[in-house]
Image 1: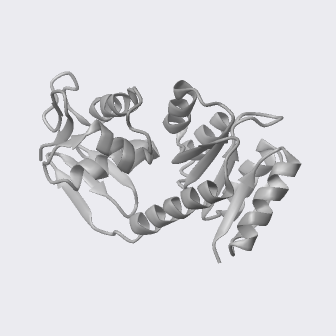
Image 2: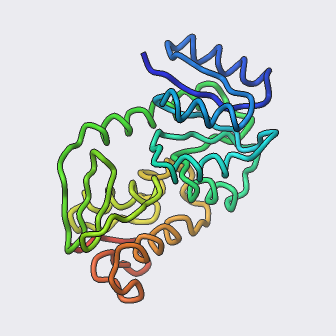
Length: 227
């Protein structure tokens, strides 16, 4: 049975979400503060974490950073009352995999959870290693090595790299990347999310980030990966 961890300090909201998730067949553990939630994430390793960003003893950003720094790669869906792009981007940069803005519908929350669990299952079932240049990617273990050295990527950076890699040199537009990696529904909004993450990938993987050999810009369209 799929185990979910909900870290949410609002008891009424937590009760409603837990009830809806259990009705769908999930096993749900609830933590009402950051310390308890972090301990549960480490100790019981749920299949997915639903994390409120505003908690009484800390914030979700700090929890995300701590878990990712410690090598916990469980999918994390953040709940936020903040709709500003900068807050969402910060959540992704700290290690979030997706987000839902309060107030949200149960149907939307369930759809996001199902999508994250599917992606997690596919990633975990892909044991093969792929290479381009001097970069080696293990999709199953979600690890990357550049020039023989391990490289630490955020979950979204890794997902973006895989999407580009699996296009086998074809160009991906920014709109396509927003849909495939960030699950944006409205891609008409102005956002630099893709460009920021590409810049980070180049910084971490390219020998000369200012003159990339592999992660290339296709002017006025998007990006492609040249092996």
